[in-house]
Length: 131
Image 1 (cartoon, rainbow, N blue to C red):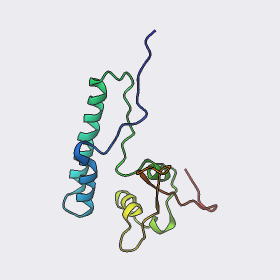
Image 2: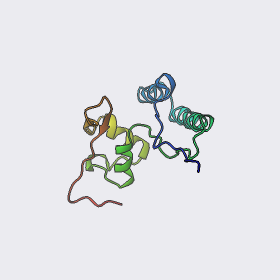
Image 3: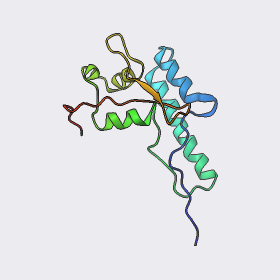
Image 4: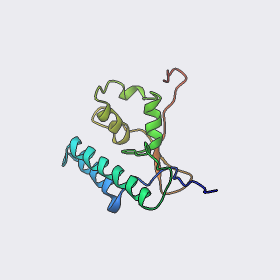
């Protein structure tokens, strides 16, 4: 019996921190959203190819995040803090939650189990309605 191999997520930062650098370039308005999307798409394809080349049987997908899986889950559940709800463009809203904007302070970041990885702390309220 052959045991199937898989990964529970693939490192998304990319070679030489390409994802992080692309994101920071977009935030600094040195590149466009289209360029960020292209780099992100190429990175995902490369990661799928790496897994295939190394013989992974069940290749992970839908594990990419522009910033943080915790924030992605909050957004998926509509756990958007009130101060960001008026931002109509969903991409701008997402990034405003990370870095803030002229009208809104960013959400808090904290360390994941005392590691060097930080994540966005969801802001939940008893009055929230989640999807």
